[in-house]
Image: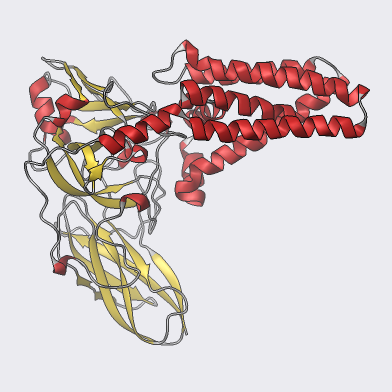
Length: 485
């Protein structure tokens, strides 16, 4: 285990200097994510939410330590089988690193260094466990383990790519928008404690993606390719993209992994340029019906070409979020924002490529893992408050509802299986943004069951039929149990 710690620390330190995403843990973790079936992915996200990545890293660290313990036993009892196991694990890690999108042979270096350090320390400590005294052996093992931890900590502090990206973000000056979003009116939100705010602060915005560590992209070197079945393929630099007409657009984004009543969604005022205009410049060929967008993390999304060409839908290549440059965690320097579609078919972060193609020719990242190729956001609603322990008397029940790109016309609340009662709606800031609702309830002491449903602007009532997140989004009515005291 001490040798495994030293190996990891050395590998992480080398990765921090050259390429943080090539670290042994992140490389293997990304490989595991790629192999994860849809049902298991949904289960992990349901259990851990945006903590899914820290959970995976902790699990991988535990696996490495267990593998280290096994290697130690083998090395003492049947040398050099312990070192052979370390080499095999290193080969797996190196292979995972060099097969990632955009990887180079140099990305194998952290894994190779980890193998050399781990194998040599294992051989050394394995020998000392036989020849040295107990105290001397434990002292050597402890020093080795501490050096590994120190190396890992130093790697986090010295990560050149991450540090450089943060510095680049700090120097970005957002383009002046040609059109700004009208701020929400006072009537567009309720002053109710605990209700979801109309706009989500950047620090609170959900993050679900396949990148264990967000790609560290230099905007000066960034390029976007617009290619595929088009008459005029072209590429843009970050400076050229920033010089295009930019406008603001308030839009709520939804993750397909959001369970009914979940919080894997958020609203921001995005600053970006029209994807429709870029596609018009490229001139898609007849028969094309899909745009396959790709990110630097290896993710891809299949978006209907007709949606991106829809003049009534504000699909953007975003560079700004709530008045700030796009944060690294949310796709810096450029990401896609498409109203009305779940993120896995539209919201590619760290965007590098738009390929015009056809659904019958290409498949996106999650489409090959059991999810639908097309996935409009489903009509849904959520109860935010009250919490257990609310006092009897007049209680405000409140939450949000969404029918993206259509709009919400009605929200109703059911209490203890009784009749559906109409709720008060806040103003409709945008059909692409969730809408707040509230209901004043004369609550009595005891346990109560609250259930909510929404109706969209076309008259569609939210279904009570229960479906999981796979293959294209969860359905059902959000139901909560509350205890009134």
